Length: 220
Image 1 (cartoon, one colour):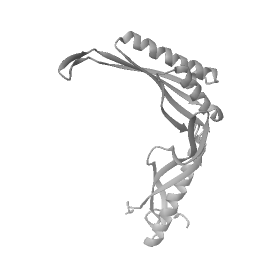
Image 2 (tube, helix red, strand yellow):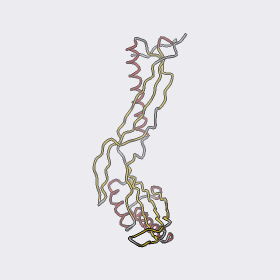
Image 3 (tube, one colour):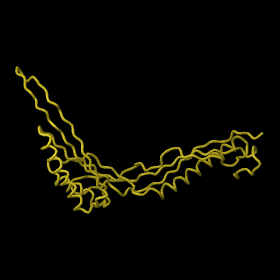
Image 4 (cartoon, helix red, strand yellow):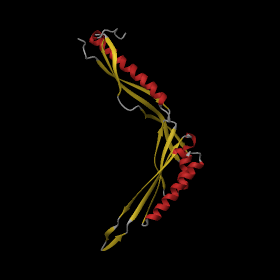
């Protein structure tokens, strides 16, 4: 009877890639007693940021906007010996997320957007992405498979049994880029840090024993 137990190994493949897109998350936030006025002021600021980014060559398809708001209902508070009624106040936040593909101009583009947005404008975050990690993922997957097979061959040798065929392969997790080390760059008043990232793939590979099947074992 064939032995159902074989060798299961995990292989990891890593490929360094250079990020080529800056993702800038900008926001215009306004707080005031009148919801309509706060909304109008935030909209004016966010529109200014969008127009400034478009003027720097950012495509409409690389811009995304969103809006959120909340209202403090107001309350009575005590200040010294007297009670003061605090009126309701509404906070409106309009976010402009921009994918900046011209890295040399990214810092200046962000700075121009902040100037156009005026007092309500701020930077919430910046991050780096790889626009197309597909080729690196293919390379990392091949490296992960070779790593897993190499480990299986070593284990079979240690066990004193021939290694049989692969009968199951699964990808252990998402294959995506992650930062590993940064290099400094800056433009205008907005400093940016880019760097190398890694596309990482993990595979789980299961082999049978070569002496449990009527097939030739995997050569060492």
